[in-house]
Image 1 (cartoon, helix red, strand yellow):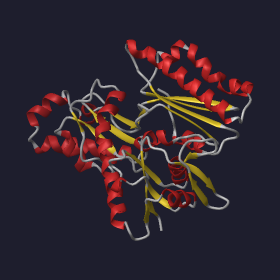
Image 2 (cartoon, helix red, strand yellow):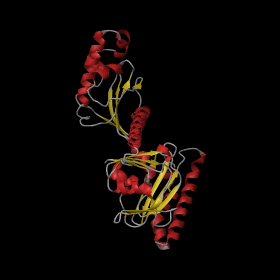
Image 3 (cartoon, rainbow, N blue to C red):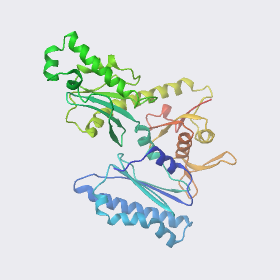
Length: 366
């Protein structure tokens, strides 16, 4: 899997020099059907070549030169044996980038004067950073995570385990015998306060969700010791000892996804609450214009649906079109790009989830 950072995505969003080709395809990770990846890829490259030829903007030799790096991947056996759920490629006459990503894209080829990034937005939105604090008898581990990455971070000044901190010979056995004693709880609470103090620097001024991983008995005690305001109410239950950082991250994802869904529901409620006040719009042309001016604070867009047309920022004019002819671009993609570049939030949704089944929904800042 390749890492697509927020900075890289914003780089893809910006205007490029020359014509841009964006290609998306689903990928099969393993099994005999993995051979379908190269067949599908070859067909999409051919589709891009045909569209470039039909546009008439490049000579045949320029098209071959532009697509050459993508063609070379066809013979790269290690590349095809190491796929994720989806593949995204971005080409200009001067550049070529690809990403193997944890998302099952629909097949799509878009050729315009900027990269088409809307299929990537669910990854950006769901790639929220979060932290895991895993406590077992043997060690304390702190991890910064996202959907795409996980990194263990040392916390200076914290004893490596509960036994060392509290001078216990066998914490687990004593825990089982003394779970009800005030003395044992006081000692554990004392230790958790040390841990909380050690986390203050790495979490200072952060708003990442912090997810606790440990046996159920310990979580209420850690809640009592905790001073970080973004400790989640749900935790990873069970002894985390022996679990890899990647496994703990995977166990935490349902908790993070639930937080994201709650945040999206709150945003939808705010949109519905402000409907008809002039602070919302479901008109594609208006949303594109206002996103360009930085007025869109929250944007809801349907996944896998395009609305083609053009936007002239000099005249603030949006022209709708019926298809993806040369010169047209997906206006929903453009609105999403401008919203993100202006520090707004974009929520990709299914068509059925869209409020009132509208083509787009925007909540304005003012």
